[in-house]
Image (cartoon, rainbow, N blue to C red; front, side, top):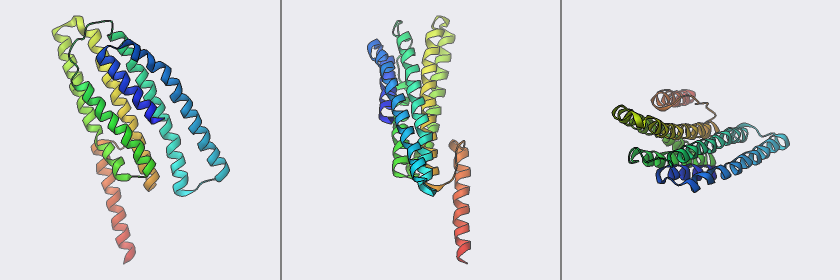
Length: 223
């Protein structure tokens, strides 16, 4: 399911950059497949809960998967949003060369793939690395936003098209946020700690405190 979603995102960005109408339209057909996969996995999880009543770590895994598939489904929806932007932009001449958007896409792709892998493997370190990359995505978005703002000031006739590029970058940023959500669920599955809403630097301050407390408590328990 996640592979379907990230391929949709990659192709949507490619369609935008290359002004490929056919590829953009194909994204809409694939969105239904992601929706069907979500329903299929959700049904499997509910069946496991009903038949086996999992506990502790097993229960956390099922909960993490149920939450994660909703984030993956949203990625597909956001890919569709980018495809719509690609169709609109394809009717006009490019307002600027695309430099940061492809780079932003590469980081976003790595975050999505690693977040899902961290959940599958229960890899806390890999999940942490995904959360750290969120700052890179934010920097890309700010750079694109500021560049487009300056471009619009110089040539107001390009404001509409420029705004579409910002919206596409915003969609990528949100996809990266969904990857962070999955990474947080992976940490929850692995450790039992709920770290949602602790993003970027704020997350690391609080998360390191939690880990230090665990070490201290462990040492005290041996005395």
